[in-house]
Image (cartoon, rainbow, N blue to C red; front, side, top):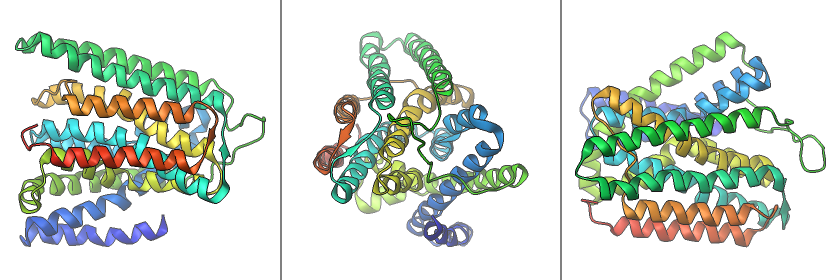
Length: 353
């Protein structure tokens, strides 16, 4: 993480590029690079604050703010009216965690340690929730095709579905907080090797506030320069949203999942990968439905067929890999292969999708 913090040097570069009109390409690149360490610092501040509040409140903080960077970027995009970009980034974050991050963790961890084991009983809950998330997002999308063009009913379906999904997410947090903490299948302690820095509460809150403000500014620059970037490189806004934006916002967390897998702590690695995807699907996505409504740019839980297909496929294969309590490098390679195939398919989709 210390090496990533050097990317904070791009924050003043992005500000200067915006004020001095150096061009949208420079603004986009510098803002994207600056977001990576800021998101990492925000995650560390959240963990430091969680240490001071105890396991119950700390777990709630991590469950609520684990994807704060993604939430801020998408809120800025909603304010700019880029609803398609927001929906693509939601699916892209889920795919990235279930296929790329989990796959890379299994691949590198398996190459180093061979067959790795993890607590099947804990992971099975997350695996089931992943399937639930795919169902919860797919049903409104498929039903909306029959309800349209009655937008009022489409919006009502999305809002009620969002309420139910948020309810399930709250119940999952309550269940998790009532379970014994940091024990593996053999009853021994699992040391959270990615524990946050030992900052005081006041310092953690201050750093968290500064990080949120920095993310908001960089997100404005990123979204504002997006159109020029897509035209220059011949990329669709959909591809940028489903592949690039999730990577930019989640690099720090992705690295942590891989690092703990290399240390043979697969319970923690899978918890990060699966947990992050669940936060996006069951918390961030429905929350954005209500945020968009208040911002005057209503977003419904209606995703296109390629997005639904990709999400269902990713949830099924990730659940199958995680359900047996063992992993190896070949399973990781298979997950990455699925992600690459989907990425290539998304690249060739027409811009109007």
